[in-house]
Length: 73
Image (cartoon, rainbow, N blue to C red):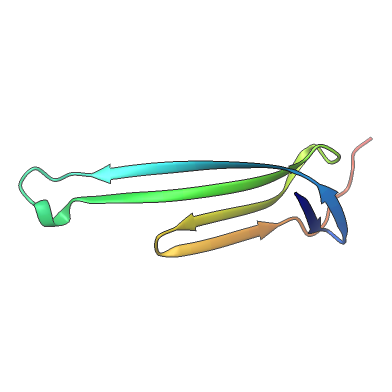
């Protein structure tokens, strides 16, 4: 994918992971719960860093995008 971040376009590799948490209460079936969370990252080999992250949960979606960077020597 090509991602626009920090004022320019970066060719990126997209990587996703899904985490699942199960909460089981022996005497309280009504409290049993499974929570799924999917996180997707876009990695720029040009920068050697992630330029975008998308975190999706059933009740919340958040996104972080690189806004600036400075390459070291």
